Amino acid sequence: MISQETARHSFLVLSSNVLKLGFGFITTMILASGLGPVGFGQYSQVINLVLTVSALADFGINLTFVRLYGKRSDDPQDARIFWSRGIFTIRILLSAVVTLFSLLLLPAISMYVTSDEIRSTLVRLACLMIVGDGIFSFVLAVCQAGQKFKKYAILNPLPNIVRTVILGLMYLTQSMNVDTAVLAIIAAVTTGSLVSIVIDPALRLRRIRRDDLDNFRGMLGWGKWLLIQTIANTFMVKLDLIMLGYFDISNDLIGNYALGLYFASLITILQTTFITVLLPRVSALKSGQEVGRYMRRTFGMIMAIVSVVVCVGFGGSYAIRLFYGAEYPYASSIFGYLIIAFGASFIVTPITILAFTFDFPQILAFQNIAAAVLVFGIQVLLIPLWGILGAAIAVVLARTISEGAAMIAVYARVNRDRDVMVHP
Image 1 (cartoon, rainbow, N blue to C red):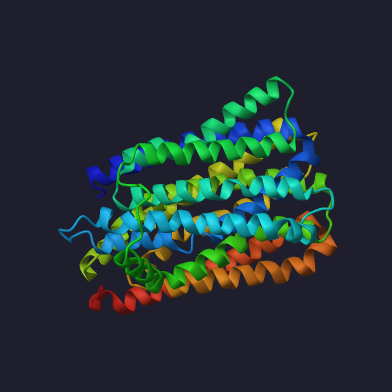
Image 2 (cartoon, rainbow, N blue to C red):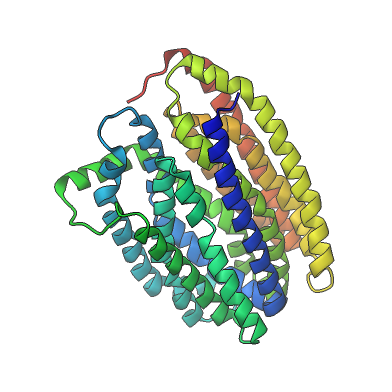
């Protein structure tokens, strides 16, 4: 049985993500209609490239923070303050450094991995979102770790709400173009990060002391596999648009692919809801009996997830054809392939998340590395032959193979070690 507390937290996070999903859907509609296939393709390439770098600036800290807090949940010391005091300052510095390097290097890199129409000034403009994105994602991790789900529910959809309002005004005043759309997302993540700091007095810039550096090194020590996982997962998720730009696929076709990708990514938001609620509890499992009780509930979880994926698949395909059928004729087909890939990842989550319980993050790192390599290798073969369809097929094959292998490996580890659980 699911406890009342878990049910309440799940409802808060689900409500938050449904709100986020709804405003994200409206934002996508505004962007796709206001920019057209060519402009939407350019916008998607630029944001995809910058978010790839922004995710790498995380260094695995966010997931490590949540996992370590779960392991320290019985410590009488206030672990939330202990782990967030100096780490917050370090996290901002890391984002600032990555932003600086991005401003210097990304325009040159974009010449090789985006279409020729992408201007270097547009790439530099988009780089300004990295600091705000880093702060906001870390604050959400702090809320998740401390199971402050009410605060999480308030903050989570905020950037999407702000961006939707700004883009709606631009659409109505006919002032929307790729540059102003990028400015809208910068304003949205900046607003989200500032509000998140204001409502959490524990998160302030403080002088970094020696024990803060020791804590940071300790986090990186355990989190090195999460860093590898983060890097590999980032490239796996973002690689398709980068590869399409590299092979000089036209912006209108990339716009079709991006629209299908955005709709399929709705599954990722639902998966994030599931992980947000479950990860702190899974990290805190301390006996084979607790793991056994959890395992007995996984079949029901998986069946519920399958139902959700099927509903999103049919609903998303209908919505794309209804609203964008004429202007984006290929988006529905791309969505059909990608929903299989994202759905496969979601379906195995109840099993693979147990890697955190058994201090076995290596398997998730290897899974993401394998998926990134498979995506790259298959897309090199298929994109020159079938264009955006080849890119989508490559994602399906890479995800289903890697996620299935990860689930088998974690399940085997659980059955082998759940009676001899040892936690640091």
